[in-house]
Length: 354
Image (cartoon, rainbow, N blue to C red; front, side):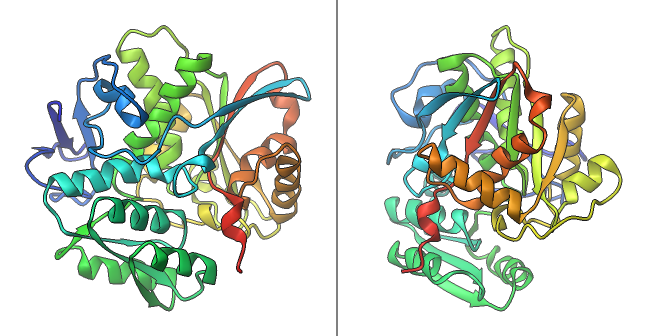
């Protein structure tokens, strides 16, 4: 590992990342960040290609990162579609999980635990198996049979509880005993996503706009921090304008940025962004303001049509992925003549029940 510290912006707490694991600040309970000096150093493959730009790189590589980008010109807009659903577990979460589970392995943990009914649970189960660690995934009983089956097939113990809140509460009772992944809090998930920016910049240069499905906000923060890191090492670029996308059903980022809620149709198709209390909400709001961004809300009918359009282009994506394209279609005049990055976050193959 390069010299890297856990750091709390709120109270100033600081400790070496190599000393022990913190999923949040142990002093004030705020989300914790990482403090290190990035350097340009070329590695081998996957996340290791950017070894000097990350706090450390994974000790194992199973195919995460280096996903394809497809360029499409649609309605006067040049799109970069980043195919993150091509990662090993079928979502962008593999970037953060790869860092996190590798860190757990380096710190000699034997068991990891996480609460997730979706992509993170599958990703954590996969990487835990690859590293020879035991995993326990706490899920609400409403989780689809397909996802339960896949998590079990990957060797994880599945613990079912009635609701999402019950899952969040139960996993905290295990956090003192096992390595708690805590992906909505964990800064390693944010920094894992910075590698998306590094890859896009290396291949195409910076986009003008990034449209990002936003639940816990780790992807949005990671992409913006990635371009900030590139500036720190001397790259001359303008940070892209962020457009966060949420659904009408759960809209904490929209409310925080706009100061009010907007009524619309249900958006429960996009379960991946239904995060009512994102721990990094204040930071998300600050970054959207810092780079003159915005938040767009979409509903199920818009999501379904966008998903159909994307599949017509050859992209088999889940509804959460489609929210970004739905947001573009809703306000496409705003993006005329611009280069727009859309991260296709998760695979639609996980929708199949049988």
